[in-house]
Image 1 (cartoon, rainbow, N blue to C red):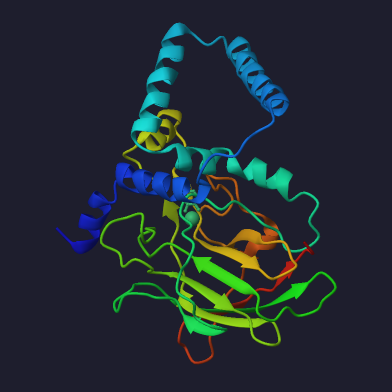
Image 2 (image 1 turned 90 degrees about the vertical axis):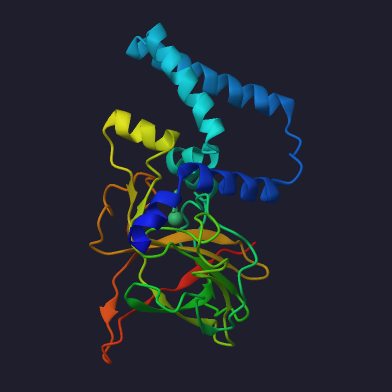
Length: 285
Ligand code: MBD
Ligand code: FE
């Protein structure tokens, strides 16, 4: 068996689901108190919306039982983070960031881990010696909405490898592979050396994969870079950047592509891969 086939086999839904669940639990800590009136309002509306679907689609008992088994398996596979981030999060992001003037955000997804290696204003993401992919020089400037460059801003970047796998969520990949934290220089600038990622396929062997297959959908997200950009006194922006003309760019299963987030890399003059620039504008806190 080739190395890549072996990795595809061992990168199971249960494996990445369990990791995504524990990463989320760490982030969440103790659950926050929520106003009962707000729970009543939102939970009542959500349950009512489902009732409407059942009436409109004339859902049968067989279908209700199929839903029940599927929901049970989403929990058993640890795929609640994946399910929610693929099909629900983009609307939460839309509502949360509707009033921002700065750069567009988009969903975080289930695979962010805080605390990646600090690499200064210019550096190379940690990667294996034989890491496959086209080199990409990704540079830019972080600014306030009034145009002031923001020195000491943080640019936290993470992305999948050439097989679409994320370190810490698939076995056999070094801990911080393709994850790093950069700090802008006195002019608000950064320069990141990495590789162009490949499209990402939702694990097909878990309950999310079963839903996708049962519905006849495709299971793919276009190739993307994930970023969190922040600076003191400004709102943190969680976003993703995509590649012009890339596969699935118009049919992202997670519905998280926006026209403002599409990069157009060009070949470097020295023939050493591609380069692209992208600036981030942060709203005041
Ligand atoms: C991903 O890589 C991702 O970014 C999202 C949003 C969901 C699943 C996998
Ligand atoms: Fe992703």
